[in-house]
Length: 455
Image: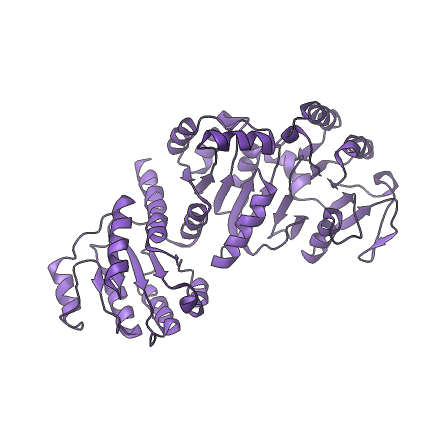
């Protein structure tokens, strides 16, 4: 498999939008706007016989009327006009297509989809879709999609569902998770996830890959590509279809066969793929893998200012296969030198509701430096007099004492802690809303480390 056949798709020098519109509620408007807002450094050719100008761009009546070469054509027409548009692109010598139009195999029309695939192949083109949302490449500044709310980063996201792109991107923005690319491939009539995976394995800005997969037409190829990539790049998959009802919903959504979930799970484990079962798990796994070092073991040191959340964290870590061992006597003695004797110090260490930012920083630093702790989880339930910003800043300073060890926080109480979150995001310290989510995220980090050690 070679990624060079996707060059015209993912690195176009010119893009035509067939079905461009002046109606802001239409996808044909949004795609042109996204390309402009993304500052695409190439030629943009809106195509619509009823328009002459759009966003100060000349609008062409047909793809044939464009004098220059076109690397990529984005088709946003009704299904019954798509085949004619493909023929026009073929005659023009367009190299690649994104067909955003829907109504094909996902609605039972396999015949038209097969004819679409046949014509694309006959003209020697490559196609993303149909029934997809296109792609965004942030480093290359190509926003070939109606979804442009993407922060730059190192995570590449592959999705069968266009709507899932919007959901994942929105959740990612809230936690400061940035993207190198997102790619919506829809029905995978031509280009599927296995070929995209191969491309991303050679995409320098990408350091982590996430996938939303409803079904895989070429499962063996996908797993082969995953086995090549996972020793170097973490791969997280969110795959629905655990129930019969979910499997039926998948078939009606993209026309894909969901497959047997247990078979996929086993194959994913062997290939080094980390599998998430919920949206929250997926985002949390990607967040922690994107900015934390891998641990040398599974021993967690927990800091809290309240007993209840500390107990929940212990349970959650234990259920996630992590060890919460009592601290060794020498470490307890160090804590005793500056903490009141009423503070429990056996793990979790409870610094109490009056725990100051300075105390948070000092305790965190000692756990980060301890050879008996592989990962640190810091919890805080702010009181009425707590300065959550100052506590967040203290954790950031503590992290600088040993940035080689994973450190995550769990600031509880929703709106009360909001002011402290930007400080943590800026320092690339993941914060999780509950002890369970924090422990589960550490589990993904530990699974990745254990799998690499086993190779």
